[in-house]
Length: 111
Image (cartoon, rainbow, N blue to C red; front, side, top):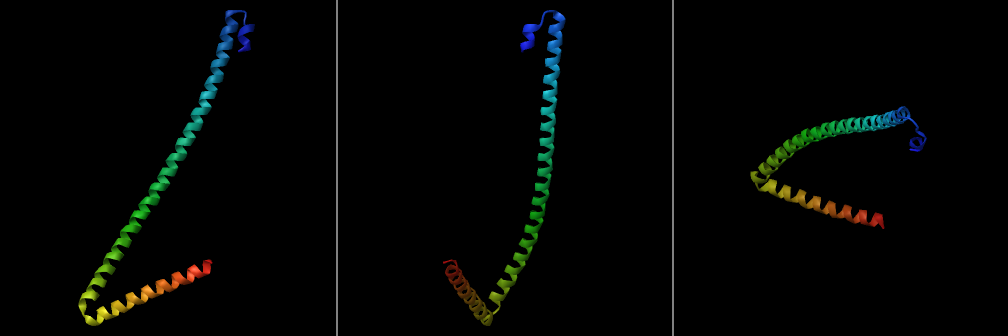
């Protein structure tokens, strides 16, 4: 801005304005380049996340199939007879006891 005070002729004013315009254009070009780089980084990140989510979707689909099959087998076993129900009840009780023992041991290990 100090150049304005020294400008004596219209040619000097145009030269000062031209330099100022070029400086501002260069500044704008560098900002646009940074924004473009940022947009490309965001695009790459979004594509990676979409691939990750697609993989999770297929994993959940396969797990759903496994769980559905397991529930069907479990239901069939529970309905099949008295001996299986006793076995199933014993396994459930055993799992509950194991759970409480493990929780007790973990709480003791933390203190």
